Length: 324
Image (cartoon, one colour):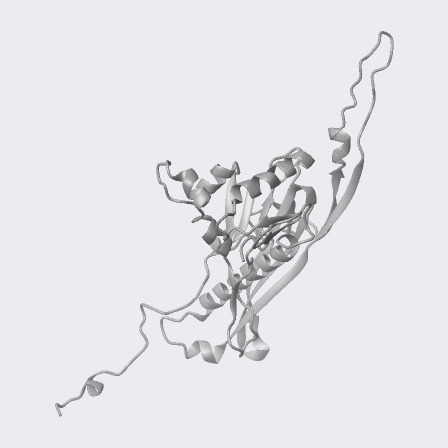
């Protein structure tokens, strides 16, 4: 046996130029992308709603000489928002930090962990508020065969026609609101089927790229944008076997979203972000490093305050179970 042996000349230590972690990209999450962000100074307040029916009714009449013109007006109501405060923290104790090897940086890791927690929570709230049944006018449900009223053939069926399905709802939204929808949001699994669907491939086969992209699909559908919600969550409790799933599932939302919040501008929804919360930025978020002397630690804490408000149900159609 040769001397010295391999284990005699090298002691395994931690590499300082690589580590393996799982930090999801912010691009996978949609909560701050679909609807306009409305910065608000107060945690709760009201806003005006114009009754659409008064604006779309024709009131003008012929006017005879020496008579008054036809008169009319409109009704106003109010609704309110209330920004809930969400928070999470990671404590870094002095003993552990002092004993930490390179390349670990516990403060950076804690900041990243808290930031991902915020992305996960905001998308989960977004899905609960917007991306589910009984929220929008004219819900549609995908079925494997023989669709009936308020149903459509799921897009992973060979005879399905997603363009026709989406176009029918696009026209329905225009008919009841006067606005064409401009945004389509879908789960990652739905996008995986749609981008390989025969009807889409046939439509883009003569384009310059010939490769399906979200921008290409948006153009083919007459929309401004297509967004894919591809955030992944572990739904198991700590210590249990991990169970990973897409937050948005296998559904889809077609909706009109205002380009920017403004007066007399409709939108399917708005996100009211409480920027008046101490230290909060435009998205209502603040991250702080706080001393915790009683437990000889330093606390990294993220706080955010927002209300994701569905303000015009007629502006959207939700497609449940778009694929099997």
